[in-house]
Image (cartoon, rainbow, N blue to C red; front, top):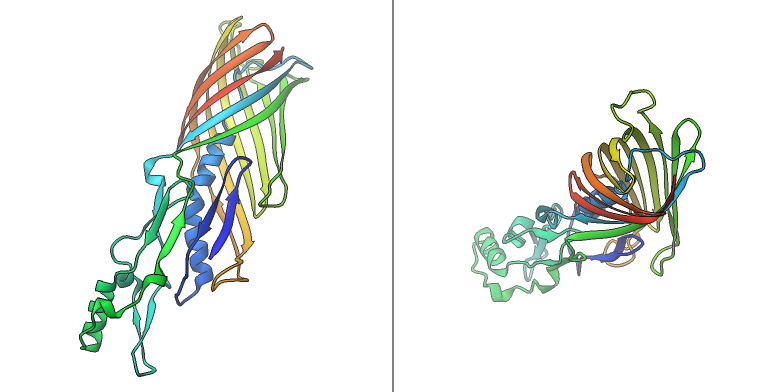
Length: 331
């Protein structure tokens, strides 16, 4: 069966399993493997989207603003390029020639060599049935010699593909503006056009509040702030939400700023789609999934030249992420 299950503004992939013969609850099976397949993506997407939200703890004055473009690159760990494919329900029914009797061959026998398959970020993997193992199992069960050459298992191969990338790049335009009470509003909105799905959108909304107005700083160039951000992606079969809270500090000089933050993320995804081909055609698949991103630490630097600025920072969390930002700022 073939089904597009996920896309972003920049990338999409095709999830497919060819010529599937199995028994059991295939709807649940498709759901379980879809979760394992897509888990690294929701984590990486959350790491990216919750990056680049600040470049200083100093809050804009009222009506001060900046217009920025942030480019993020999340690095995918090697152990998230593959997952152990769930074969529950993939047992093979063998019809005994000349009879109506059926012997069930366990999936662990049929695909005994390797059950490792690619995730969204992996390459292409195929689970190939072992005629030798099946013939041996049937011979022992039936007490009749069966040769591997007597079996045709070619259409029982399972194939799955990912995008074959170990880095997920993304970008986000955003604007920040100063409000009263030493508070700053951050806003980002992107309309997404897709040939493969319904049109979608991405929204970011955040507030940053100065804390050094309550906590005396030893020098005027040190700043402290707290920030909360809510983000939502709507695109085709998926809807994902991301929240982020941080405490940030910076040392802000006329040209250079050094900044860092401690933050906490939460990412979740909901998917709902109908299988269009294969034995599961017409089946509705729906599931929700939480990202594994949680705590993060970020350190970075900003260079300001007149109204322009350039920033770069590095985040350590469930994944590691590099962010580069540039824009126009007037404080």
